[in-house]
Image 1 (cartoon, rainbow, N blue to C red):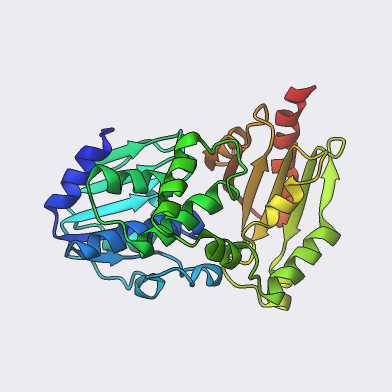
Image 2 (image 1 turned 60 degrees about the vertical axis):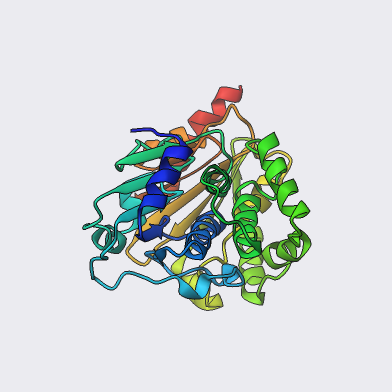
Length: 326
């Protein structure tokens, strides 16, 4: 059932052993939300496990607390409460984490994706929030939980990355008020912005160069796409997190209203990451056709390979969505 943040805060306060997770292939919002909540609860004396199916991406390891994040080892956690953040479906926390959480008497689901069905025993889904980090901040306020500099660092990065550094239309007045409160408390947002957006490794620039050389346009240059292959990943020794923000380069082209990166996974599946910059083009509608989902202007799906066939199917459906503009 859908409940208030005050009720979730009370549930958390009553628990002693807690585990917190987020979605597979975690991004800035997932990692920042996770650690923002975990560090706050640990400072209250709670025994808190931070667990993710996949490793923290290298581009986010500067965040305080990342060294304490574990991955599932096949065991079942002895906990009073499990919390899933920023994860639209239960399965997206990952098979290992699902098993680790299997003995938890209660699961809390906190998210901002419109496609979230409200799984778990207690769910708070706020589709008006541009980032899960914003909901976590409001949760900490609602529960009068500690918010120190380390917590602020994590939640700022969560919010900043999921709002496109406050550029996306989902950014709202509350977003800016939260950041203002963080600044008033002494948070060095300039340092965090440098670490997030101006500290890329050489391989990430090589990846961007390949994208610029290989991306293709269709629908009168209104759609841009790029196929990221395993071959290229091996050549540049790509690491988790290296693709973060690349799609925004395609979206920044004046004629483009929707763009997609098709990433070839090791299991042969193709991961489609799509973005829109026109509210009339709902990329979530397209992703739902392929078993995915997300936000109207940022969504993803996984398709059966090979990559050329998957891209052709997805782009055909995206063509139909873009024709709404005609």
